[in-house]
Length: 395
Image (cartoon, rainbow, N blue to C red):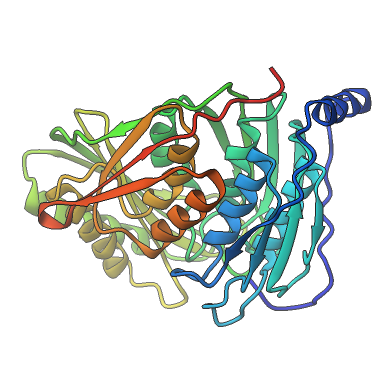
């Protein structure tokens, strides 16, 4: 996703807001002094994870808090350092939403300066023309538009189920209930599924603006109620691939929790729903305290259905056995919301990932919030943060 031409990518953006409203919002920002903050916060993009996490969170927080940022050594630890298609589309999208001044927004750029002005909600469209992750673009834009001036819609074309990114089903089934605890509501519709290498997936995200984020607690695991899942396949792949995924996953879950419900469906995407070959599985564990844990695996070129199902179920089983409330894929996604929330948020999770440590590093630098990590038995970690209580500025 990071190779190709070095020319900037043009993002076609459509606004459903009258020009007069945009001008009025900009004038109000000027009058309240929100436009003038010339000191850049510098973020080291090579820190820990050294991938796109630092960039995504830095630009999002820059827009929300109206603080200019300079990100250096972007994706320094990746085989192809610098901005890839996905990151560039995310940056340019937030540039348009924030009416920002940006330098360095070109493919493979390793340094970027971003100076936001405001947050203008509305309808935006992005066509990545690749299998660039749709969900990672949404990761950047969702927290920003929560503090926008109107209901927003983001239409993105790209990869819905690709490696090294949460699949759209994870966003719908695991992220959505988690963010509800912060007072966030969004809807995500999948119009087409898109796989590597061509992409061609299309999603529409809708979100309502809020005044502030609630502090959230993810500390009570409760008891396991059920495991749900879907093994899917598309294109010319045989149905046995998905059946093998389901059988391996169900076998592992039933072996460990024979008395609990385990319902994994097999689903074939029609040519209308997905144009290319693709396969994968998404599993969720539901507890009686409201925890939703997820694991997902995407098939590669040499698809082994039994291995895919086994990997996903073993990962989920580890979360359940250790009674954690936030899985390893969700950790880093919640950090930005914890830092901005009004009050102290806590999440009980497993060992901190590099993505999470990087997200904490960025959040502390830009927001001034402080995170505390306590370590318990069985690899558990308790992350707590007294949020800064950020309020939307246009009300």
